[in-house]
Image (cartoon, rainbow, N blue to C red; front, top):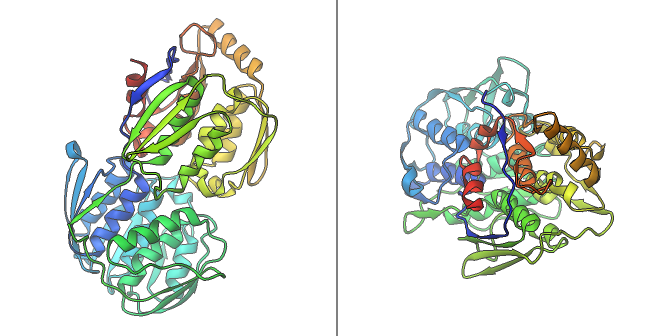
Amino acid sequence: MTDPLPITPFTQPLDHQIRLPGSKSITNRALILAALADGETRLEGALFSRDTRIMLEALKVLGFQCSADQSTQSITVKGEGGSIPNNSAELHIGNAGTAARFLTAFLALQSGGCYTLDGDPAMRERPMAGLLDALCALDAATFEFHGKPGHFPFTLKAKGYKGGTATVDASASSQILSALLLAAPAGCGDIQLSCPGVRPAYVAITLKMREAFGAMPTSCDTEGNYTLEPLKYQAPADGVYRIEPDISAASYLLALSLIQGGQLNLPNLSADPLQGDAHFVEVLAHHGLRVDAENNEWIASCSTSEAIGRGHREIDFNPFSDTFLTYGAIAPLLGGSVRICGIGHTRHQETDRIAGMANELSKLGQLVKEEDDALTISTKPNELRARALKARNAGGLIEIDTYEDHRFAMSFGILGSFDLIGDGKPWLAIRDPQCCGKTYPDFFEVLDQLRS
């Protein structure tokens, strides 16, 4: 474990352009679709991070021909038209939820295949049962568990998708439904999935991306039922799929633009992106941030670094929950109080994100009420400053725990970028900053660029 990373505050307004990394969610979906398709697909703007490397390595272990060039952010995959070259393999998934769920549904395609999957200790606790139960209901796979039933590690014996009906419990993660929407149509029978109450934003990404690989537009009926007809995925006509930049990653830079002022340009983002996290812009607009989408670029600006506090607010982060940590971390600078709700499922992600955020904000002297699916933060800016000064006077800094969760590191990295004491010197440090490698490996280097 390395020493905590001190965060040097910004002392000038922003005036920069930053190219965001590709979206992890989109890169891993595209890797699965490219493998399922007939033909060769080149992914441009792909993310190279721990999670996407895990997915890419898994495809190679399964026998797919893949090549990657990080210098050009490109990955080429030769699809096998719905079959998997190797009938057996051992796969280690780390703590990559997308890889775990997408690969599990994908492997069920290969009738007669036998695959063993495991992950990090944290992955062994993450919810998989909704997907595994659905695969059993469809008679697409059976499972032998080597630890806790319904969790990693397990051996999957594939039987193929032959049609059928299943009720899908995706309340813990919409990735469970997305995994089936990606893989099941590559089988040989009509499939009906009943999945009421799933969070729609990431499912919408999945459905839209399927169309780029030859699927007809699909949507659920009013009761949350999907009908999937068999299809043969095809590589895009020009052989290229372009990965949208990561708007979850953009949330940190948008928050920085709000608290620091100035202007920040984010290229290659359209006015109508795939990712639901774009709605985070509306949350920050309440405090005075303006984002204009022009010529395939977002231009974020804030005329003052004094964010506007407008009393108590309640915000439903359910459709864009990855960004609740970004907002929670800077809440002490925004005035008033806020109830962040609709986030119960985040207790089962890389860590219990509600409990972790409550712990870290309490460490900063904020009053936090923790509920099953919500946090209420009553901000105490004077107490924050007092604790920062106390740590300084004791020869240290406030140290933030990150729980092996990239979003804690990046969110509180933005808070630490605020010149709280007014002398441009660090007052906050991030433990285990390398955990950003999951989605944004050079995040703290980017912050350094923005200070220059």
